[in-house]
Length: 436
Ligand code: S3P
Image 1 (cartoon, rainbow, N blue to C red):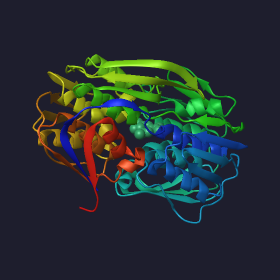
Image 2: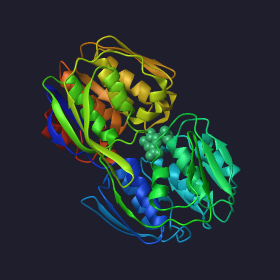
Image 3: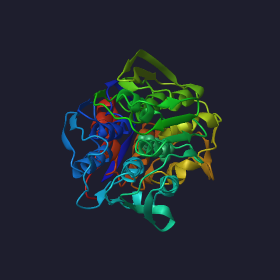
Image 4: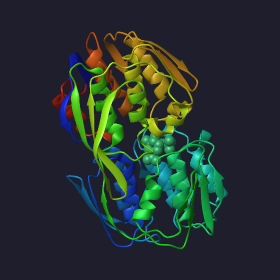
């Protein structure tokens, strides 16, 4: 599928973007491993979180839904999963594969995790190596890539792991394995990463979770108790409209019920440093996660040096932050973001190449980019099958001087079902063309 974007348009109104992807994945995993019935509302009905849902169904968990965001999970307890009949296909979803490997390494059955061509290129040694230190037996393809073949029946032991990369997926994988491992499992992170796993362990009343600034500890022997989960709207999806409203003329948009967990709000901080007009209201805590309404109006953005400590707090938002930088006055410099090269695509290269196609002065560096804001033209953009690259260039269309064609946009459905309809309703001139 291609997107065709006509230049211009504005962004106005009130929107509630779909549910948070990270929390949706974890709601299925924790709900499945809990004792009792977990009711989820606001679940993201995107392909990634549905891949997690299907995988747990394939392991014998009775899961009803999703139906308009409602999912009911009949938990089987930590030791109730059944051997799946075939390999679990996790599609495009790195979060599913990395978090589930921690659970599956501790089961008494063998399992195999596979994915699509993008996921099959992504590094899994970051979880396979520490899990192996815990006693897991895991075989990967060359270079630590999927598929992951996980041998059951190996007892895990707790370790202390100093993560070499700031990754919430690695942290979460090890904490999940730690629910089964003898003794204590502690994970130290080099920079703050999203803490939905820790919050959910608390929400499911898991005893013995301990946290300090950069270290989390769990002990095995506890149980997870079912609860209700209200998934907030995903700030990573809201970010497209935050940048859209910042760069479009006459824009004024309110994004409702957005998750504003402080480990996720780097995009707000970065856009504010660039001069964006963003206000957050109606702040409340729902199911252990902070939520608020975010109002964004047009602004004259300025280029900045992005503070490195904000990088992990905005890691998924950089594609659209690159678009903000391209529309800002002056130079934006991003450093310390080499992780962007191993996401669903090499997001540094994909964004720089696309911006250069539109006539922007943008240069990739090993760990970031330098972008000089200016006029945007039109052209044909490769999304590299990456949902966030595709949506970012739709936003760029607001300031483009000519139409944009964005190739290979099917994967937008992994994180943002209904994106085109919502973008059109807000005032962006985009259509999807099938089978071209
Ligand atoms: C996620 C963590 C991040 C993020 C991904 C979701 C999670 O990945 O990019 O989209 O749900 O834990 P890393 O852990 O690789 O930084």
